[in-house]
Length: 403
Image (tube, rainbow, N blue to C red; front, side, top):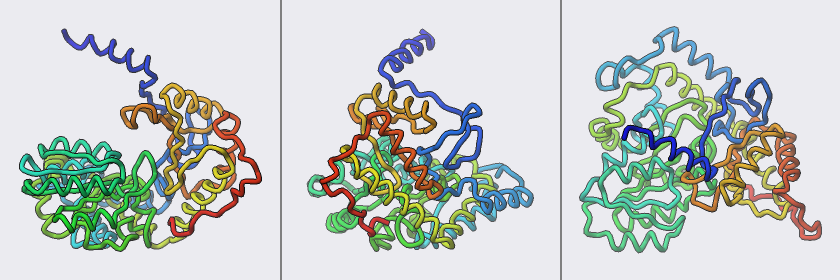
């Protein structure tokens, strides 16, 4: 049989407007990028604070290369555990206000490693329907019974917890900011239910780290839930401007994962220069409040501009979904924006449910009001936006407690 079937399946994917193709960025990750020698206004990067090309981060990485070389050479438990790995883990623990932290090469590996270490076939793991794919994959691979509750539905979550007393362990896992919808989880209610039913809590704070809470410490910190969430996952590849994932929590948790998490044990450590870049990114976030303030100013401004139009679009974070519907229509809108110099790829199934294909706007602190106005004007040209009746009173400012 061989692999001849692949061409037929690829054709079917293409016929349903679901074929994924990459565009090659020829410049640094900024608000404007180069593709095939042409400049495009980018609204699709998770580089929320614009740190991926920051001078301090680049200088820190270069200095680390000169001192430590590039590759780590082995897994952390063999000979790849270097000074900067330890420094970064200490920095993360301090940043997240936990006893300890453990570094993983990616956020995906952090979620897989933590979930598969904590629960197995004798246990149950319960998650939000819109959790990130890495969470879902971890839940499935763990061997535990896996149950999903409707998005942010606390009544259904309570019902699942009530019916799960026969399991050895109960793990409750949720994103804090949902990566495709941009809305947030009701973490105080989730923490309260977990306490009521003696469940372990795990929060993926990847898209909130560097964005929410004082000094960008995340949504767990913003809600004052320090010490009430057992496992905090985070990413260094988004607002921090680097690469990598981590788990933060108690010293016992981190010691346990160091001995049990396969995605930590059986992989080569991150290059030390990557750790240096992450350390610099975390320092910039804590030292320069204007980065987060500018990001939220952009979020508020886009929310105000969108309120002028008939399409209702929720804005709760730097992630703003433009729901189109069919995959073909989303792809067509993305192509039209691209022809007008704006880069926002279409997000289609299986990343999002069928019928909810979308363009996912990601704002950065480095976007200007003029950049946002250009986006709005171009969406208007495509027909996606149309003005409301001016007498409807749509000039309300967004709530200042969003940031």
